[in-house]
Image (cartoon, rainbow, N blue to C red; front, side, top):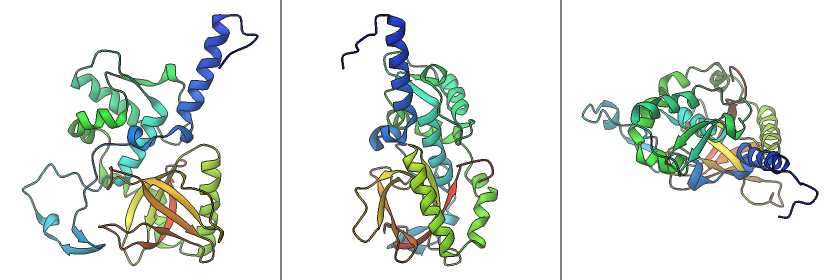
Length: 266
């Protein structure tokens, strides 16, 4: 792109910085293969076709390294790294002690805060992106991005017990649309309480194609249980409800959606 009327290096730098900040802060620049975690959240129980087939995993004590109950933590971490971290692949690697400090510096920032400009972000030298770094240091990251059980005690989670009406879900759909239109992420708490087929958190980052003729909206999400590829969430206006993709842990279909990490105490 040719810049006309810009004669100083300072002016060019200011424009470049503004463009870089917009790209880094907007969810429109999000790449699944670059900006998500390489490791998976593991379910406590063993599932097949969305149904528990064994409680063995829950009682097993021989695998202390199993990484479970971290779906909230992982969706939050992905947003935090996208907003507050910067990767510098051309600089020398840092030792694990310093890496530990920098990971915690990122994950202690409230995820609902505005993205930081590049010069104020926490820098991670030697890596191109979060996917690469989390693959190289999976255990280190797992130890430093947060405890799983704490996230389930967030005050906003208690909406699952009493906000069951379709009007609320219609409002949530509107908030989801507005959030994406602003170029922001929407971290969703999925629940079908009291059925309890699903109790999970995903990060919605973009639409999956255009709105269907019947008015249905389709979304791509980062699901911590499935780091290999995006999953799919759907809004069905005729039923005024959300549907989530079938997988090994979920039978698929109906789920309520509650936004989390959009503001304080949510």
